[in-house]
Image (tube, rainbow, N blue to C red; front, side):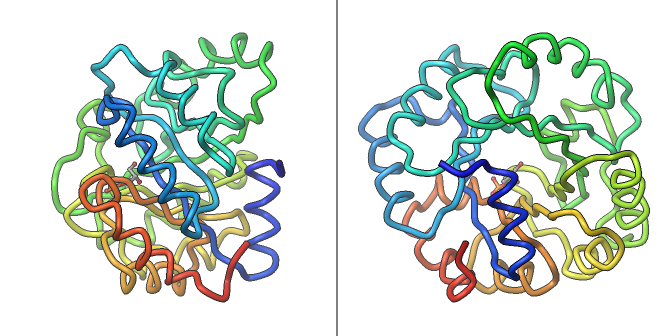
Length: 249
Ligand code: 1GP
């Protein structure tokens, strides 16, 4: 299996687009629905499965991850809310620095805790500049991180933050409205970041239909992440994945 990051970079370099589904282990308690979701993922144009959450309250993370890995034909990428969500069962991990915020624990503190664990695992570690954007409603991510998201209508702040992330040597930029955001990150923000950094750009939060996905790809996103829409109506994945038609990895 190709690595997550190399696949994404190859896609970006050839103008193709990628799609990830975010699975929240708290919402995957029964085996039958997990199997159905994974089957749907296999039959659509999903390139990666992300697993994680800002706040997980059930004690099933590792067990759930092992099941997902077993049923997945694409790389499984950890999108961790804390070092407790590190597992050797996955293929890759987004090593997230919350560069939109000023909480030192999420800029370097938790990384120090996680680094020795990761050093002894075969996981692909991908340094990621994670940026929360205010997309209309307070999200678990902004509350739990105790940070202010970037205002929705301030693309220049997002661009400057992403530039700093690139200059600091990060490998990816992730613009996130947070799970269940009432609107997506704006196209003008994605465009502003795209025109100022060369890194692959992930966009997530509030993506619910093909038109939104197509607009975000057009603005410069390389990888879109869909979570809530898939949980609420798994069949939506078919139409959302149409947005990357003819741009497959
Ligand atoms: C959240 O980007 C992800 O971190 C996905 O958001 O659940 O709103 O699709 P949604």
